[in-house]
Each structure stands twice: as structure tokens, then as C-alpha cells.
Image (cartoon, rainbow, N blue to C red):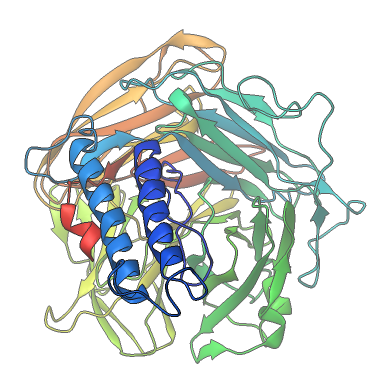
Length: 581
């Protein structure tokens, strides 16, 4: 999301001939001072009557006159500044520290669905009811671009353009700022809206924007169901703001894996992107992964086998925009064993917490990347119902510098829900790492689906996930990373109606609590879940959406992160010395 933009006046640069911007009073005074200086200079100019050179008696040298004129202007500026002090900012702290303000615009990017012939994708948008003074605005989602080529059976085998900017729809934007061809429009905060995304393997990504009262906490969730063998499973992702760097851990080019990076550019300028792959032998150098140009308003999909060298079982992927900004996401599909989005990880850090392990986890595989500067020795801990503990026979993992290490954890949860934490084995030797965890659930018929967890950050003041279904399909996982905490869980009204419901949940210190998501009364359609920290220590959270389809235990897990609905605004203090610097 973007911070409020403040219009700045152009600065005067040395040699550009522009004067500083002044108020009307300053301009008049400066003009008067400048006229006086010019008159004195003219009186002493060569060729004037009574003098053949500069006249010292009539005002001194030109240097002295220029200095006096500049001093006169500075005096006027200083005086007006003193007479017209800046207005006091709203709700300013008496200590002069930053104040808090609600965001006025939020923008996120959703990846290309690439859902095959039998898949369908839904976009669900939601803004929690506001408590601030913001009014008006709009919330909407629209295709980032229109497909440029006919649908194909698989993603492009090379990083080529998959879409071109869509022409503007007739009629232009509506009065709320939403384009006429938007796929969905929010009617009001507090009520989610769902709509189908573009269909087909060349479907573009989507861009979503909220302004005014719709901006604080604006969230968009993309959910795809695929029933054909290629890409079988439920894939879900929370759309993220455009950025310049994204980390993913848990990708692969081995076996039946079909993993690809989705790049979506909703900006007005082109982006140049590098995709860096790391395996168990370090960085995989490939020129095809560098300098990928993503045109404005376009989407690209890049199959990982086209930019790696041979089959690599476990990969960490770093997407870097060397110019421009993009939305980046990584989708993993393991034949008929399952598919999902690999969420973007939190920034590399010595400690990573991964919430959301269901009790019926049939298999788990941990993938960790360490930076080239140093090895990492990490403790593996689980958060159960009574706090943190070390799982038997899986106490630690060693990761060589610049490489990826992986370990099979098996049925690590032992029929209890959990969160996983990696932390330095030696507190005096912290190494920032990136971590991902693949988890598999298997049905009684042996069919399975997979999901990927990643290191995340606490929910903070408030976090939301938009697409939840009734009938017990949604499960919420809450893990306290420190002291005991109390969180408030709110289920919104449904997309087709319903009455919101709220529940307070106590989370023990270091413990994990799983609960069926509270559902709104009289639910019609899908609904949103909002988690707020009421008291106590930090809490990380994840939501599992489980929708068994054709005897496959389809599921997807998304972490909930602080929605950054407010920003810190620095306070401005009057400083008369600024005109003397």
C-alpha cells in the first residue's frame, strides 16, 4: 500500500535560473528590494553622467550591493516566516513525535491464475468497517492487461510477454474512480464482494485499488480450483502490493513439478526483473533469468525449468526488480499430488515463524536458504497447545552459506495443530535466513493436496483474509510468539448477506490455538475474517480453507499480516534557522 502523497514545489537548482517559490507578500517585498538594488547599480554604471566607473559614494561596489540585496530578501523571508508560522498538525503529540493517520490509497497486485481447462478463479475484495474520518472513494479490481495470444496448454517455456495493455473501456472511470470494466466494485466497507477472474491459461493478472474510506485495510484474496491432473488442487493467495524484491522458499524443478513465477506490472513504466535461483550448491547462474522486461500493464509467466540447469529438488527464489516495480508470485504444482501458491516470505531474519500446520498433516518438508556471507545453524521448534517444544529427531538444521538445505519432517504435528519456529542455535551467531514449509494432507482414498507455508510477521493491530466459506471450511490458526495474548476474530457479513459475528480468543504464551472460523448469522455467500490484537504479546496467524472436491482433500493456507491501514506522519516544527543555512 502506498503512503499519502504530498505535493512538493519544485526546488531551485544551482544554475537553473529559477527563484525560490515565495508567498505574495514575499514576492512583493523581494521585487521592491530587487528594484532598489538595480537602481543603485544603474547609477554607477559606466557611461552614466558624472562618472566614468563605479561610484563608491553612491552605494559601494557591485559585490556589496548584491550582498545587501540578498540580505534584504532573506530578511523579508525570515520576517514573513515568523509572522506566518505553519499550522499545527492534527492530533500532534506534545513531544513532537510522529502522529498516526489513515492511509488514503491502497493498491495490490494479483498474479496470473493459469488455471488450465477445468479450473476457475475467484477474486474476493473486502475493506473492514472504518473508524476514521475518511469518506468517499472506491474499491475495485480489474484485469491488469488483456491476453495477447490464443490460450495454450501450458505456461510459456521462456520469459516472453503473455499479455499487452488492455484498451480503455468505453465510458472511462466512474465517479468513484473505478474503471468501467472493473471485475468487481465494493459497495461499502464491511461487506465483501466476489467475482470471477479472467479465465484460461493466458489470463492476465489483476490490479486492485482502494481510495478514501475504502483504503484502510483493503484486502483481496484470489482462490483457484483445478480438477484436472495438471495443477490438481486448491490454490489461494492474498494479493500483495507491488515491490522491488520478493523471496520464495520451497520451489522445485524435479519430478513432476511444474513451478512458475508470475510477474505482473500494473505500473505506468516498464520493469526490468532478475530471477535468482539458489539450490543445494548455491546460486544457479543463467543469463535467461536476468534482464526480463515486463511492459507497463502486462503479465508474464516464467517456467523455472527454463532458467535453471537441470532438475533441482529444493529451490529458493529471489525476484528482484532492478528498475520499476512489479507484483511477483510463485505457483507450485506437483502433478496429481497437489498445487498451491508459495507465499512470499518475510524478509531474511535470524528467526522465522511459520504458522498454520493442521493436525492431520501427513508429510512436511522444510526448506531453508542462508545468505552467501555465513552458514546458519538453526533450532527447529513447534508451538503446541502448551507452548514451544523441540520435536524428537528433528531438533536442528545446518545450512551452508549461499545454499539451500531441506529436511523431511514427516508427520511432525502428531495429530495436533502447530506453528513452526526456526531460531539461531547460538544466540551469539544470528544469520538471517528465508524459510518455507511444504505440508501435505491425504484422504482415505490416498489422494492428496499440498500447501506451502512461509516465514511471516505478527498480525499487529489488524489483519484480514477475504475469501472464507461456510460449513466449517475455514480454520484459523493463532500462535503466540511470546507472552499470552487476546485476539478478537470478526466474521464479516457475507457477499450475499448475513450478520457479522465476533469472538475473543485467548492464546497461551508460546502456544497455538486452532478454531473453526466464526461464521456470520444468516450467511449467504463467502465472508471475510479480521483478526485484531486486543492485548498481550505478538501473535502470528494463518487461515486454512479446506474444500474437498472429487474425493481430493483440497486445501490452501494463507498467513494474515498487518494490513497497514495507518501510517506514521512525521511532525514539522518551526525552524527559523533554515533561511540561514
